[in-house]
Picture (cartoon, rainbow, N blue to C red):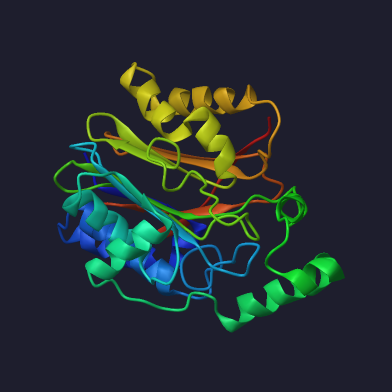
Length: 309
């Protein structure tokens, strides 16, 4: 089977690096980590890493995860502050600890312990936009007592409820015919502090099984958590469904959810035959993703399939 790489539009800064490494025979985990690191460091990508949007308090909290499709070992970090490359810290969790996930202060402690690179992820433009929101949306009394005020009401009106947030996701089938997945995000803009979306949750935000395939989600992570979407796609393939049918079943699972925000959840999937499918659910505009297959000179931007529930 031919090598393949799928990443969403946010993967633009790193897709070339990952494709080049796969073409040269690198393993999927190494190639994915290298590509995602470039996305995390690129401040033009506003939903991942440095330059990502902050939470309600104006703090950037980052989430990331990786999974090895051979062993099903995963590593994840959530609500991590002050570090440049959460994807590398997630991989270190997978390889150095008996745990699958670290969050908040524990994740930051471990990052310090392994010598991970620190940075201020709140770039001036993100701070400017957050400050505009703060002055416009937070009542004067709350501004005077900030941050010791109730945040739940502000969370409900923090963003346009019709627009889901994004992430970067990388799925690969490498030259050893091994399937891997990795994701990284700054999460929902103006989120309640400590919120985790699907990205750091193995089986929701991403999943990989070398025997069958891999899947990952972008958009509103709460919905992927409720449906266990990434694991579901791979499980449907394990049950004998084609890649196409497996994604259809996962979309039907989402269709059954009642309440919540389902706008702009996008499903990415590959199988061990080197086939792929990317579907944006309820998208109001044409989206793209990046595809590289063995023999391609460079990754190509492709239009995302759109399905309306």
